[in-house]
Length: 434
Image 1 (tube, rainbow, N blue to C red):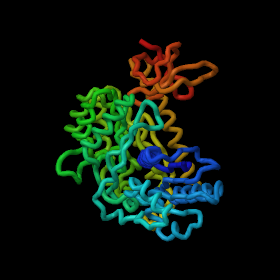
Image 2: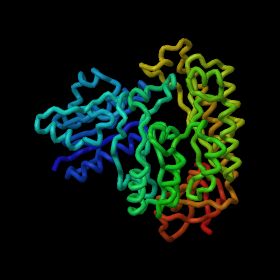
Image 3: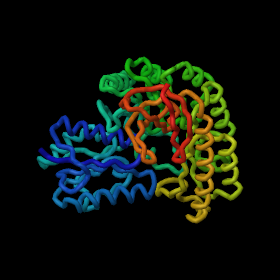
Image 4: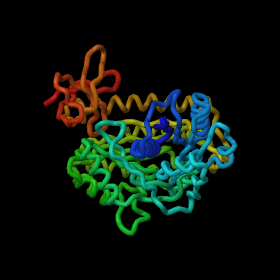
């Protein structure tokens, strides 16, 4: 029995696909071992979102070969898809598997062992096939990510992903339903619908869109919560929001990708919406849901970003008052339009702007959690933890606030009702069961 170690880099979609490959390996009789010395096969599911991600992917591949020079090192995923000849020239890599070929992992490994060649890299930009991977269990015991969509048609000026993942391809709703039903049967109570560009789900199908998919998943017995991955603000219409507000399983936690709070920067990014449109989306969500958690992403130091443009972003974030803002310093990516733009910002300036927004994020997060105090919250219990020498049971509320409570009974995997009583310094809500 061959021993296989897997490692995933990058996004939740990559993590999902890595777990799906692991499931294929287990069913085929392989033994899964930690990513350490002693494996016969190392599989690294790579990322290419930035030049740094490329470097990290290469480092992990080289690390695998150093741990066992005689092992088979497999490079899979996005870095493989975009690196071209660099991958073929890397002595640490024995086998490559591009996107949309991970489903064929077992046959690819078998053919390699027999000395047979096989197509492991396709022209991802001209395929309409959704890669058929699925999960029955995940590393998390209570929450399961479900990939429902792949590819992106947006072509933001800083992003290489459309070239690594191809055009939008949606998973058939009946296939999603089947997987969610299996997950529910295995005890999962929360599913997170995720994809490369989730808002585009269904544009390539004869009928159906993200809203109809949510309705399908909502009907699955045993699932208590539905959480959505990152959304584009343009999908947040009056009709969309009103339909969602009637779904009791839907978590009032919406991650709306922003990237900049300045319209001129958004235009250079090719983001296709304005700050005014974005704010309207936030207003719609706050009207329809009681105190929803709004989270976002922001890039600082985009090429040409002036101090005035940065300050507009800072003021916009203060105005919207997100629960959480994920701050990223712009990182050049070869092959993108932004990489060739004039006015590249120094690392020192990017670091200072990041520091300012991280401070603002901490203030906004504390404010949102404080507003939860005295409110009834629903907690999906995940694991016991130790806080300041005391033991608690911990989980997340529907708004994705980390919450803890004291109880001698083990509630792991269950949904409980509680009241938020205190905000702890490490951004935890201390709760009391009802």
